[in-house]
Length: 137
Image (tube, rainbow, N blue to C red; front, top):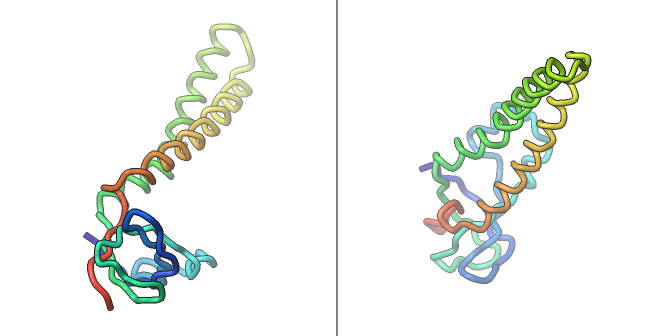
């Protein structure tokens, strides 16, 4: 489990809270994201922390790895499959192979991005994937 510190910016229903996350250890050395100071997450608020309180929360490492794989690798794999499907279609129907591979790759990449968005929506509703507030700081 990875733990981070943030500030409660809003209280939601069902024991949920919006937490503004500061730059964490992984971001300190990078600095590539200009919006890293404005990241907010929804966390389970079992400690009933109040608005403005600093809290420590934990995020399961498996959720980070799965999320990174889905966001970054799946669209690329979809593009590869789309390019191969375009190649197969071009060989079968006598079209230009390169154009069919490009069109198939772009179309499958776009579908992969839609799949990522749908997956994200389904995970955001799942309670077991949300970070959990574990302590008041």
